[in-house]
Length: 269
Image (tube, rainbow, N blue to C red):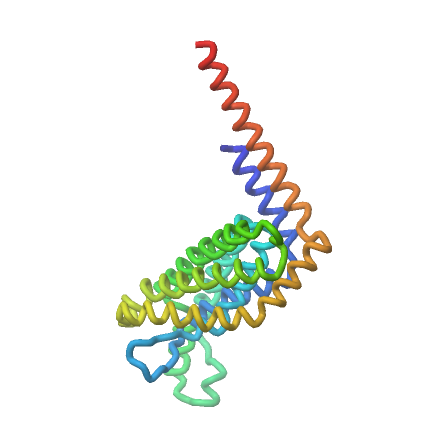
């Protein structure tokens, strides 16, 4: 157990130093932005349909996760997703503390009504516990689903696993499943109980958001594919992948030794 924990921290430390900083920065910004924009609903003249502005950037998070899964594996992508969710909560805490500081927002000079403007913006940027809870839970659940479904779908392609067809299939299918889960979990936790959405609105929001985000990511997936190929050509993350393989081999050797020991004991009996 101790060895497993040590391996995990060793792998995570090397992973954080191996991931291209620009990619991780974009990933973090998208996670933070989509959770902040989820506070704003979109006015749609259809009673059974409801959407929030989080869909405008959430596709970026899934694009990054698909790229990270392709190069570093689902375990690494999920670890980075949880770390990103943690940093998002830290940033939300800082915004909440800033909202408690007396002062005037710049919007006051455009609209007046100081009390109304300050109260509204403090509430938006300071966040509410149920929005933070819902967004964090939805993101972590969807990240796990997206990353591991992406990985296992990729295993189906034996002939050309690194080709664009394989990348596109694993990306589109996993994103569709992950986005639907993300939208649905958030809608059920937050929108249904606190915003008064019906269950039908929650499901249609999840489905419509999934389609919209999937279409946007489909446009940019060729870029993600080319970036992954460049990572592979330049050996990005090779030290992490080597360590991962070594730790896996060590664990398999340990299990083999334990099995042999048990078989030996049974033979002696």
